[in-house]
Length: 208
Image (cartoon, rainbow, N blue to C red; front, side, top):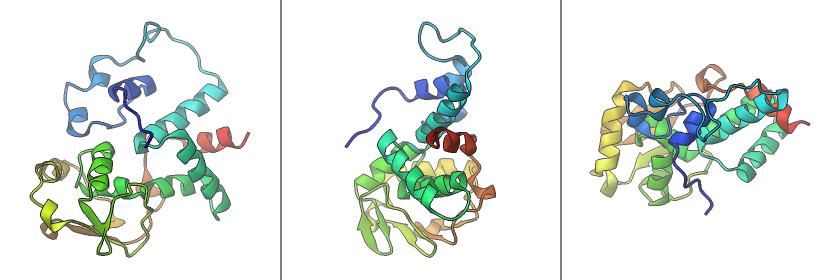
């Protein structure tokens, strides 16, 4: 399975902002963006005015990196979003938000989406009572996500839940932390999908 294996802090530096790819570390002074807020590489500190294409590319890269999706899969999500009714950019973000690994992270069962993907692949979660090991599974309203009984003592999950107390669980998800269970109440609205990306620029890039 293809995945990004290089240091993820370089991705945040390349985009010039925190993408919160390393969980709690991103909230500390150890964050690479706090220490070196310029792109990596020998030419990283040079300033140049990006072109229209450059701006669109950066927004696409940010969205891909936030959700941990590679190019082929991301393009597939765009094509699905373009066929749906409504605003394509909003449809695209909503599809990404519905991924199981993203929902596990949003609920606080994992400190980052990367950790959520690992936990899902290792079989620590059930959806509607069935064990699921595919992070890209898209959930719908009414679906129930829960931690496997044998995994509820996991130090990783317990540590993530403790750190998640600083974050707010989105209103479209209903968390029962005591029972390690949550329900997808509804699909996220535009206001609940706030990420630091101008999705209309992503749409413009792919629409050429």
